[in-house]
Length: 274
Image (cartoon, rainbow, N blue to C red; front, side):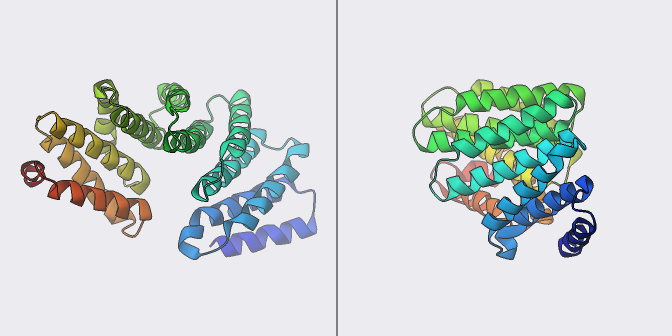
């Protein structure tokens, strides 16, 4: 468990305060506790501060610098997301996260974790910009370029899931601003097919796919075109996600949006066909 891992790290740090590996693993444990805090009820703020401090203790040693910078980027991305959820500008922490991820990639260009995490940090700021009426497209395009570069190295599932999230956010902005989203949906099709074919069992990626497919269904319905295929992709992704984490807040919200669409005028036939 994370509690036992944290205790082991604390013991190691007490024995040798200069043990870089112990500090790096401490930061790992702390940010994973942050990740679980919505379910556990822990206050993430002190955990984030401690995670940054632990990772920074690793830097002077030069030990596994790509991993260390990736951890620091992850923690700042969490801080950015927390700030945005509280109505505060996530920009400063997003910039810190980007700097750490880009440093990790400059040291290890094939370190795919940093490409996924970079896209997540950029997505936090992109959604903040969109919520405040500003275009999220520069951040989303930057994220997609990094993800596509990683996918050329290896078709990693986390990269695919992140690509679906970026395309979902781009399509949402295009629909909001009256821009034709057909190119975005066409760009998403290979990733949707690859993800669905693998039945990857990752609730986060499946929710991203479901939300993207639902946006496509809404767009098709508004044009009087059949939406059954998009709704089927949405429903299959939601079903997979439910098997992984039935109480996940993002899944519950996506499921509610799907149900509301099915009840909307003009959508009943497509809902039944799915």
